[in-house]
Amino acid sequence: MATFPSLEPTTRAVSLGDCPQQSYEGTSGDFVSFKYGTDRVGQVLTLGYEYLSESEAQQIIDHYKGQQGFLISFALPSIVWSGYTTVPIPAADYEWRYTAAPTVGISSPLKYSITVTLESVII
Amino acid sequence: MTFPSLTPSLRVFSPGVLPVVERVAASGAFVGFRRGNRTKDQTLSLTFNNLPEASVELIKDHYIDRNGTFDIFFLSSAVWSGYATPPAPLLSTAWRYASPPVISDGIIGRWAVEVQLRSHGILQGDLASEPPGSTDEDAAAADYIYDAGDSTTVAREYLLNPGAS
Image 1 (cartoon, one colour):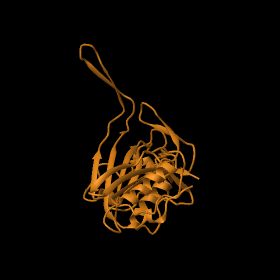
Image 2: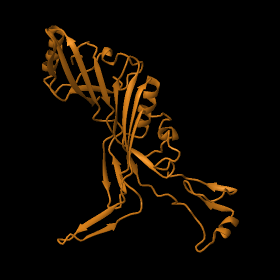
Image 3: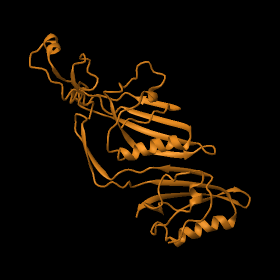
Image 4: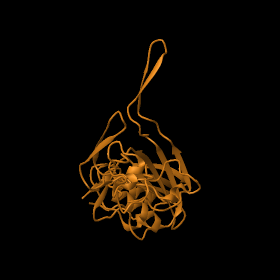
C-alpha cells in the first residue's frame, strides 16, 4: 500500500457518507428504513491542488498508476488534513481509493493543477 | 438529539406537499386523492460559513449520532433565527439528513458546512389518551393525561410527554 503523496491541498471538501440502508416510502409519505451496517460508506474527499511543479504533479499521477486506478486502497498522509486538529475521518477506520482519474490542468506556465476525488473504504 | 444550536449563514426552506395522487382525464378534468394529512418532503438547506473546527465537529458528531440519514431529529431554534414563528414548527416537525453534510475549507482555521434536510412525517399525539366522548372539562379533572409533543392541554400532576420519539 503506497501512501498518497505528501502534498498539502489548496482546496478540500469532504462529504461524510452515509450508513448503508434501504428506505421504502408509502403513498401517505410515511417511510421505513432498514439499516444494514453502522460504518458509514461513500465518504468522498475532493482535493484540489494548484501551482504544482511537474515533479509534484507526477507524484500524484504515479501514485494513481501504482494503485491500479480505482483498485487498491491506500492511506492518506496527515498533511492532507492540514488545519484540522481532529481528522474528520479517522485513518484507523478508513482507507481511500480513487473514484475517478485525477484531472490535470495548467495553473500557469510550468505549473499544474490537479483535482483528485477519493472515496473511503472501510478497513 | 437536537441539531446543534448554530445559526446558518444561508437558509432555504421549501414547505413541501401533502401526499396526493393526481389523475387527469383525457378531457383535462382533474381530480386529486389525498393519501395522508401530514406534510411531506419539506426541505431545508443550511449553509454555515466560517465555522471554527469545534462547530464543524458538532455537526459532524450529530450526523454520526443520527446514523447518517437514518434517524430523525428536531431543529434548535437557532436554526430558524430571524423568524418570530418558524415556518416548520420545532416540535411537530422532525427532520432527517437528506444527504451527507459537505465540509469544505474556508480561510485558515475556518470551514464551511452545507447541510440538506428533509422533513419526516411523525405521528403527533400517538399517546394522547382521553376517555371516548370526554369534554375538555372532564379531561381537566383527570389525574393522568398522556400528552404528546406540543399539545396545549394544561399541565397536570402527572404528565408523560414522549415528544415524537
